[in-house]
Length: 211
Ligand SMILES: Nc1ncnc2c1ncn2[C@@H]1O[C@H](COP(=O)(O)OP(=O)(O)O)[C@@H](O)[C@H]1O
Ligand SMILES: [Mg+2]
Image (cartoon, rainbow, N blue to C red; front, side, top):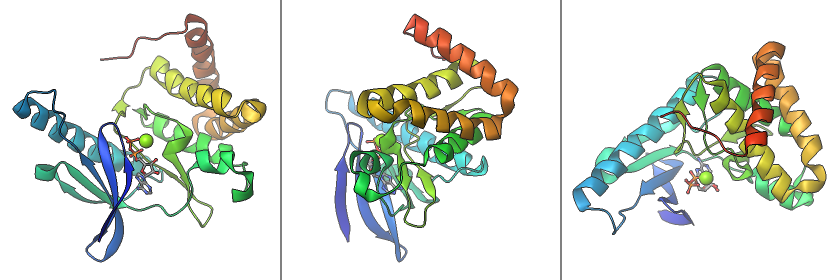
């Protein structure tokens, strides 16, 4: 059984059975415009990189999907399937339940940053509200390790921007809850420093990512 559930720019997502378990398979597809051996090398490297960061996030105490299997030669990651709506869907449809989930979002981000993991793509599509009320965080394709305050500030800035553009009426309230959750993990000092760097990033309107 393999059901395509999403076609992305870089990868396709399938719901599959793996060793009897319901699982997600994320497979990186060839890009015709790249030279084939370079394309294969890039896809392999990015697949391994994402699998590594998914696991590192789990070691940081965050609910990332459990890594079931890394199929390097097929550019595929098999991982735990989180059963539930994305936060984006919850916010778009208030009937789906509470929006009081941003403290948990902030705690997840705080736990990643405490271990110097930058998620790199913190949109509301990459958080899943699992049926039992837990929060899952996915999509570590753009994640990287850094202890720079600016990288952490940019991570938070992206969430703020996503909330402001898609859910402007409640964005401030949600971001306040998020910072409360973040602060409970990172502490006052570090949170205040990151918030002040965030203001600089916002003023500048651009940032230099570490390489
Ligand atoms: N572990 C998972 N459990 C449940 N749904 C998932 C999982 N991984 C991905 N998805 C679904 O597939 C979509 C795309 O996956 P994602 O890893 O975010 O790929 P992309 O890099 O294309 O954004 C997610 O928004 C989510 O709906
Ligand atoms: Mg995604």
